[in-house]
Length: 95
Length: 189
Image (cartoon, rainbow over all chains, first blue to last red; front, side, top):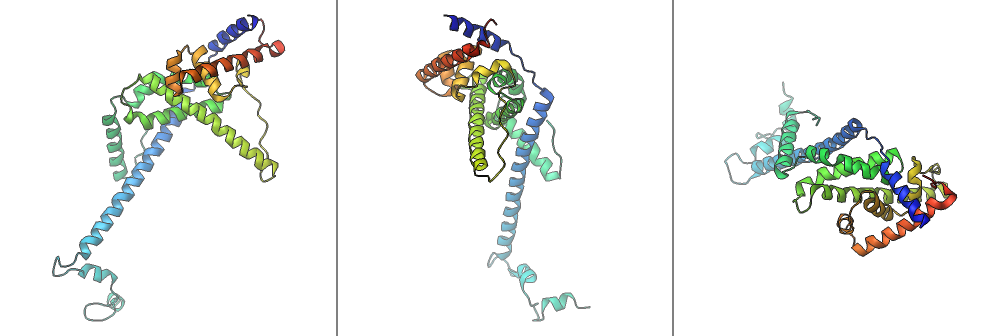
């Protein structure tokens, strides 16, 4: 009985406890974390979009039989020899 | 909310994300935060024993609320839903800390790292009798005796059967009674 009374008193005392919340600090910490998450999402989306654009570009350039000049652009970038058989580097740095 | 305006694509994507978040959920995060912050803080401030823990759990709760808000279907009251998240975050936090302390102690014993300083316990005298309770018992006791929640509500919030709530509450009360009477520190309040 005694312990029950003491318990009730303790619970009343526990209910009365008020610890102040630093609202500005809590909210700014929270928004920083949320903004960090948004930033990560934006980064992932931007990277995925960039990768898609690159894949599409490479695919459209290398699509076989789509135009008379198919592969010309990629050849221009990746081939070591120009169309007349000279080295591309010689052609580029030729005065 | 502060926005970080970097490049134009970033700015555009931030507008799209904010718009999507608002479209998907009828309630805005700020509304939920404003409505529930005091209740959550009152619970957490008595559940955890240090200022840092209180602030960490509070941040964790509303970060999880922000993540889960688009999936809130209105099956329960928003307050109950946020309480569920708060209870899980608080219990997880304490369990995570226990695991961390255990690993640090083992590594300290093996002299891999310096042992952590001994904890001083709760920063408020009234919370000391709660120290001996398990994370779940402490939460059940606070929800039932301090927050005046009913058994079925606690069962729903904590996602445990009502029988388990009752047995946890019974055990928690027993432990706290013993702690109160020990040394007579809370006698004559």
